[in-house]
Image 1 (tube, rainbow, N blue to C red):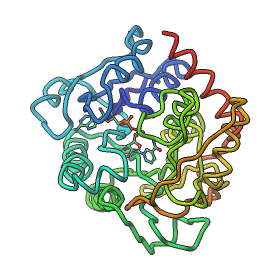
Image 2: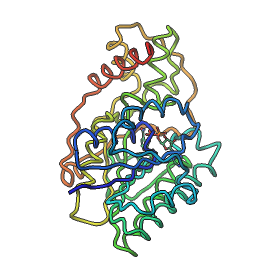
Image 3: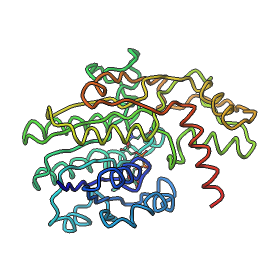
Image 4: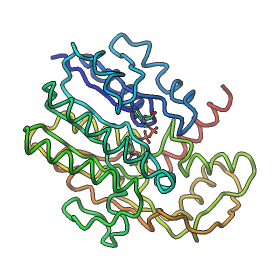
Length: 322
Ligand SMILES: NC(=O)c1ccc[n+]([C@@H]2O[C@H](COP(=O)([O-])OP(=O)(O)OC[C@H]3O[C@@H](n4cnc5c(N)ncnc54)[C@H](O)[C@@H]3O)[C@@H](O)[C@H]2O)c1
């Protein structure tokens, strides 16, 4: 049966990959993407992200701010959506420290606006793009969803916790299915320019030193975007319970030093490091326990870091030639 999915933040890094995969793999799926082309990074990149999808008759783009109902709600008034995948957000830990209110506005109030609209319009399923940052400085790694010792250290992380809790309210009051997927350091083609791997590749290509915050011991559970989109699609098919929080990670943490070494090997370049002070808001480690994702969603990350970096570097070099 045909299904229609609303993807917020649909022109962004993860949202555009999700749309492409759904259009490719599910011929019965129709997509409406909402995005306001926020200038957190160059909106031209976002237009490029969705250039192929826009050629598809099953894809529709609404350029609108989710926080402004008058910009989009009348345009979808006659469409029935089977599910919402809510990825629109102000992303990024560090910038949230200087702009906490803007993060609150989009990530919390924007989620509230969407949940409210979903409830009034009979949308039964809501998938929310949450973040590993909710665990913050909780030292008990790998992080398990049942551990509710949240220790966020950035406004961004706090907004994600708040949105997860709003979802619980809507499940409880209205029976809406709400699944929060906590993404862990997502990377891959079209990656946001502010993220580490993109910056590092650019520095190496420009024969510059890599800006390294801290002593390199911080570790991250890097997860390839195609594994993340597989996890989101599996969550779209999940029916057994109404409220779930699920980690989507790779399940292996690697130190920043080792990641940079791996990148140097992939690029066959000597890597120089410029060590800088640790950044406020950065947590020392992230590592996902992915048993729940395996059990509930049949999730199985497939792309190793070396393979993912290789693909990323190839894509990046091709993009530079465009
Ligand atoms: N990339 C990661 O490593 C990562 C990790 C954890 C969680 N997440 C979450 O995943 C989601 C997608 O992240 P991403 O990396 O693709 O980021 P992204 O910035 O590429 O995508 C987010 C999109 O949302 C849009 N947007 C922002 N505010 C909006 C608004 N008010 N109305 C409509 N659209 C709006 C932006 O224009 C952008 O295209 C976000 O919710 C982010 O917090 C990402």
